[in-house]
Amino acid sequence: MALSRFIPDAYTQILIGVVLLATFLPASGQGAVAFEWITNLAIALLFFLHGAKLSREAIISGATHWRLHLLIFGCTFILFPMLGLALKPLLFPLLGNELYLGMLYLCALPATVQSAIAFTSLARGNIPAAICSAAASSLLGIFLTPLLVMLLMDVEGQGGSTLDAIGKIVLQLLVPFIAGQLMRPLIGNWVARNIRWLRWVDQGSILLVVYTAFSAAVIGGIWDLIPMPRLLILCVVCTLFLALVLVIVEFIGRRMGLNQEDRITLLFGASKKSMATGVPMAQVLFAGGAIGTLILPLMIFHQIQLMVCAVLAQRYAKRPDTEAETAEAI
Image (cartoon, rainbow, N blue to C red; front, side, top):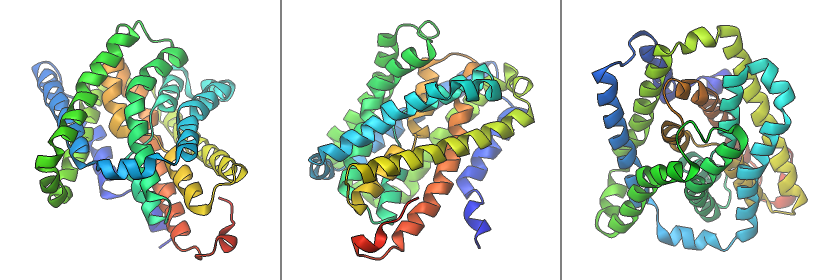
């Protein structure tokens, strides 16, 4: 039973299957163009539905907890990039240039929305604050991530100016999100009733982006550039990187005197990086086969964070109700 916790879920297995499909049957020529158009439409639909699902009341109810939100944003957009730069002497020799840049890209991304909220709920944390901070992180990331990418990775010349990149991301992600918010009074109830099958839009859009990106990467020779030993090293690096972030975030929460519920919200909100936002952004910020290499650390980190946070959430969920009895470290 203990081992079953670490077995990838069905979606992770499908994701691995998509990477294998792109490896052996990559989209090329007119097929690649068609997949790119379909992928862009799927991403727009994804963020439209995010806008339609997100309750404004929930945002308002959690927005007043400004100290917790500042801590989450600080960990997401300052702590992660600082660690990525500080660990360069260790990471660069182990991973090589392309995968290290992928780690820096991971560090520049916003936090997740769905899983951060889901794990906070399961662990009995501050759910309204989690909803507010996760949504705000995702929206702030539309503007901050391109700037951080420019500062950390010096890639402004690869896809045009930073303002152009922000403009493309706003058009592809933020505009559909706002449209969904505006349409929420008309379709919000329908979206809530059909949330189970609409999850396939979330998951399907990511699968499309991963297939399209890895098809281009395979044609560009990604697996010739990344041998299996280096891939295994990347898995270990992502695991240790996540462990380091979890320890630092827990220390910050205790040092700031947060209660147990807020520390849980901080832990799950500040330690997670969004593949749902990161993969579409990479398509805008970077060009060609380089995308596959750059999102590989994100894909691996994302799966590890889900498995580790699932175990942590279950642990917190079983804690006693009294704050004094729950004083425990990660």
